[in-house]
Image 1 (cartoon, one colour):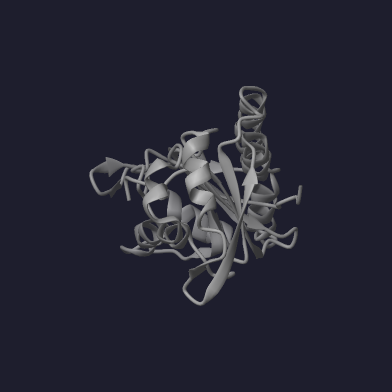
Image 2: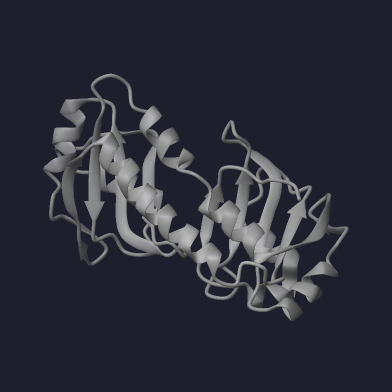
Length: 229
């Protein structure tokens, strides 16, 4: 979706579960005011509450913490191996990565939930991802696929570490914190409450209707918490 696929932060509880809230950032305060008219409208069979929020609210949540990286590395059992991928298509999906490693004579299985895409500070993909494998053997098989393709892109593969995962994610979060300083009080965001826990970005775009055309940036980020304020 080229229109309305941006500026949406789905919120998670500290336990990593969706908590039924999201923050949405628009191009300007006028579009935010239009979106507020959706207060108490339905998303499927749920009444959704819509409240004002500031850009600072959105960026603080979008910056989050490195809990996403922590959850990723914690999935690895003793002997697990991490592989870094470079050169991915910007629209690459988890399903494509799973297929990339599973096919062929050296097919190997990715750890459940063991894919972490690396995004720029504004949420756009970098073309990198970290992938977890349950064993050294599986990880070594994965590395044999170096320079194979996804779509038309040659994919580079490198052995990685938990420390590198944390370093890369933290670097992006530092960039996010610098973004907060600029224009942090602008009133161009809303907070949604009462979302179904299984709601996706597409559902929020559907709920917002025509105003979704004016959502800011190309961001699809899941955040670690939402403070109430």
